[in-house]
Image (cartoon, rainbow, N blue to C red):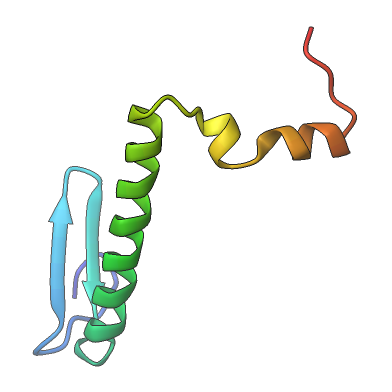
Length: 73
């Protein structure tokens, strides 16, 4: 048991400075796939930032601001 979470034989326990996660063995392949997809997405965002784009542009925040009728002061 880790902080109230049951850990079974074969489960994966990962930890870093932010915390600990328990990945049930039967979910490991799905979690790995999602992790790889997230890493690829983040690498693409970092590439775009290095090329001069802003997070505001990348995530389309201007459209949201326009819909909310927000103006820059």
